[in-house]
Image (tube, rainbow, N blue to C red; front, side, top):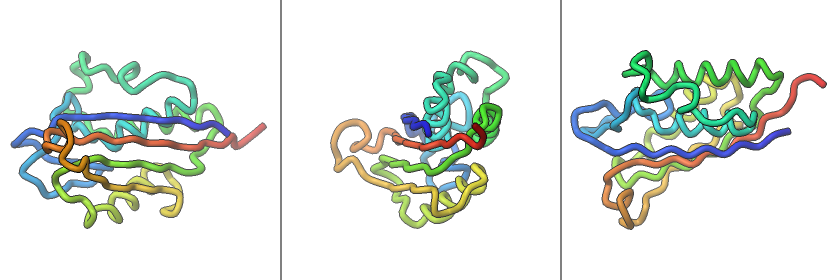
Length: 159
């Protein structure tokens, strides 16, 4: 068994779509980034890479590389999942915390969990997505961005 942690944060801006866990969230605010800026999938990818001791997402998909401009983070996660499988591991479970003052995410959590479970080819019950506010403290509390913490456990599928 191996444990990985991931973290990501992106600034909220007007005029971009807000995508979390591959699910479009109705909002006039979206996340700024080189890719689609899906902060949840970025943190999940970093947790998986961390569990494999392979570094972080930016090492494999740098924001200085024009090939990744506007790319769907689902594609980045698919590559990371390939690395997990190449090393003969599978996801056992995943726990995430989305920190967002706005928009309210509670209504989207079931769809996000279902989508993440499907992307990771695992059971819905193995995926936890929690939404928290920052209690109006700091930049996140002022609604300037969204941050995500992710923790995963992967297990070896062969010895």
